[in-house]
Image (tube, rainbow, N blue to C red; front, side, top):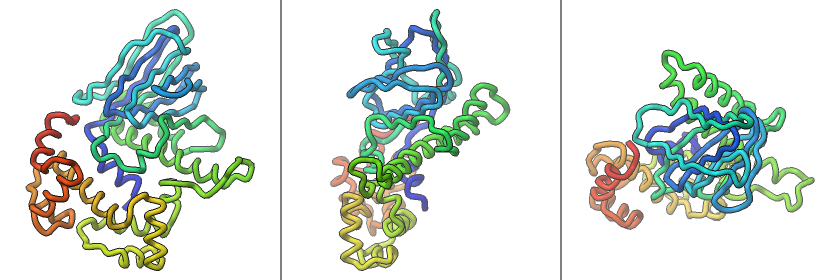
Length: 319
């Protein structure tokens, strides 16, 4: 199992959307707070990203920005330009292909994507991301991300047979490459002697770069129903029990068994959201002997019984 892919698969809801945006100055788009996360690639011209908190960020051609937390933000040709509200309809089955903002000034073209997450069970891997992930264009870096951008842009500009299915995969790929690029940059930055205060990468950048911890996480993610013990997970990691438990808790932020329980609840929530599986089946697949045991653990984590969570999800979350 790939931990990054697995986390995104567990937390994503609905269908991602993509669009090519052409805007002529003066222009500005406000993205209100929501469950969505936005990703934008500047293809031509220049613009500014204006976050809900912090200073505006000027973008150059080739820059990629990802706004993960649904806090709301704006894009504009310059700070101070009038803003119009925009919100993708998560229930719309069609991928948004083109958006145009007419004006009289210089033209800006962007490639945009929107993703939806279950905010009730957000993973620390996503929680620790900054309000804006900014990946400036640098020669020779993030080649896979650039390739995904080129493919996505080509499909959006010239739709053909199969484009709808291709777009879904490419938009997912774009998100994975953005996150991979961000975590890689954190590891690289920590290794550069010219950066003041360089040290070992912290948080999930260190987790994903630690073969011992990822071996244990792979075990948990691949077999959540297994009655794991700390000793078994330590054996997977190749560390002593005490060393493993300390390293895992320090990097992940939870003890190994606390993370196991939390991950089981995340998977149970996904099945309640996305399937009609009976509670007995979900209990078996997440390591609980009875429906009652699962229901008790689930209510402790989410504050509601599984049946109520399923009903609420069907009403509130994207299709």
